Length: 445
Image (cartoon, rainbow, N blue to C red; front, side, top):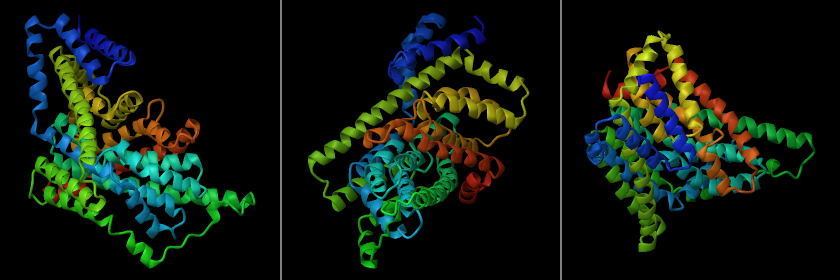
């Protein structure tokens, strides 16, 4: 069999096993093992455990369970609800201030927790009912939270960025910094849309004569109420700032920073919310173990999958075929991003990165693209998959916390935010400095 036939068979087997409903980690491991049995020397089967262990023993991957623990500590507390309440109190005079507050809360919580589903759940459980109570349409409220939650894989500390840094052999510190500018850009775009959409819904209420609509009600918060909302939020903002200073000030490695963040998050949750009992701690540790085990299994099996792909020269042949097409660099980029979007309909970002990196990164490097910049572009594109049907993980998180909103309304509510993400990608292509300026300023050229 040639590399093309092997590649097609490998891909068909992979999608066949995935669509059979087998969990991703076991599906990838099964396909890799079967191809090792059939197409590789029998002795290679003896190296499966060694290959998986060596790939998972990377010191960079140590940051994953520690950042997950940090996110679990914050996510299992009322930090999300308190953060949202404080921002609402300070932004209520802005048209659509409640929606803007939810966008900002999602951005800040994503930066603290590093998880898109956790951000959706924590902010959405408080924000969606509050927006519905104040007259926001179900689709609008769901779209804000679903799209805001995707910031969890773009703003540091992002678990997905850690995996990309490992797969692309790039600096994790540079990659984290490169995500900040585009992350802020998306927050601004989402907030502007929230203001415009609110004005449209308010104008419709006035035009239809619905003067009793909650959209037309005025809210007032005294200075004392605003200030009283800060004490529970500031410690977590200080935690976020402290972790970033420790990492980029050269005081700690990424792994040490992750450990520091986890310990401080546990301490703050215990002090601010009294979550120091064994029941509370057990809930956080159980959640961390479950998510970490799932991710590490996917990572280990994905890397075994990539190893088999490389041994059989599937990834090298695919990369050479792409280069041989002599596409212009921007057509090449567009084709690769389109492939990532399609894969995002069916696979989570972790699997997409680990499965496609051996194929797409060599042609991009040969075309002269900065892989740090491309990593940020890829994060934004994979964010679309989190809110785009038919799979859209965040869509189903929203349905879980707001079952009264029809799925159709949720899907239509998120589509404008998909358009804003496409706009963000276009802006990053025309102005790459949005992503590259900060890491260049901190680390040099």
